[in-house]
Image 1 (spheres, rainbow, N blue to C red):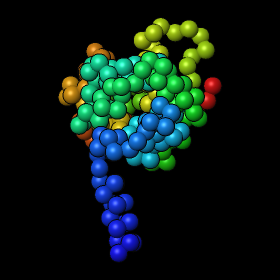
Image 2 (image 1 turned 30 degrees about the vertical axis):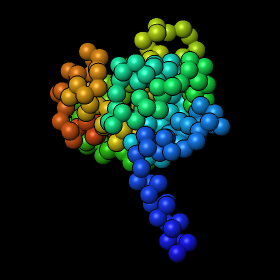
Image 3 (image 1 turned 90 degrees about the vertical axis):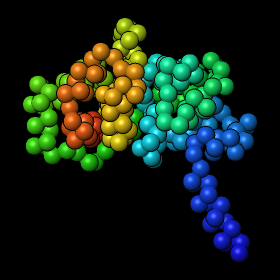
Length: 211
C-alpha cells in the first residue's frame, strides 16, 4: 500500500501544470534562479522541449523576455510564465539572468536534417540557411565583446536550442500568436510547416561557440 501511494504521488506530481506545481512548492528558501530551474534545469539545459534552454543565452535577451512576460507584452500557453515572474524584483531578475547566461552553452542536437532537405530549403529561402537567420542570431554564446546596438543584444541565439521549441516559436510568429518583428513574418509566411521544422532542426543541430 505504501508503494502504491508513493507511485501515485509521483504520477500526480508529474501531471500537474507548471503553474499548479509552482503554487504547491514552498520556494521561500530557494534562490531566484532555482525556482526557474524547476522547469528550465538548474544549469539552464532543460530536458523537455516545452521549456527553452537558457544556458549561455544573451543576458540582455533573457532580461527583456522576463520583463515582457511581467508587462504582458509576451504571453505563453496557459500563462505559466506570467505567473512565475510576476513577483520578481529587478534584483531577482539580475540574479536569474546572471546565473543562466554564464552557464556553458548547451550541446547541439545530434538530429540533423538531410543534406537534401537543407539544400531544398536554402533554395526556397534564397541563400544558405546559416546566413538566413544567423546574420542576426549569431552563434557565439557570450555577449559581444565590442559594444553593439541594444536591439542586437536582445536577439537570442538559436543554435543548440530545442528543435520543437524553435518550431513552436516560429509558428507562433507566423500566425501572429507571438508578436514578431517585420523581418520574421515575410520569411516565415513563405514557409510551410515542414520547412519550418527543417529550419528548426537545422539550428538545433548547430553548436554554439564559447567566447
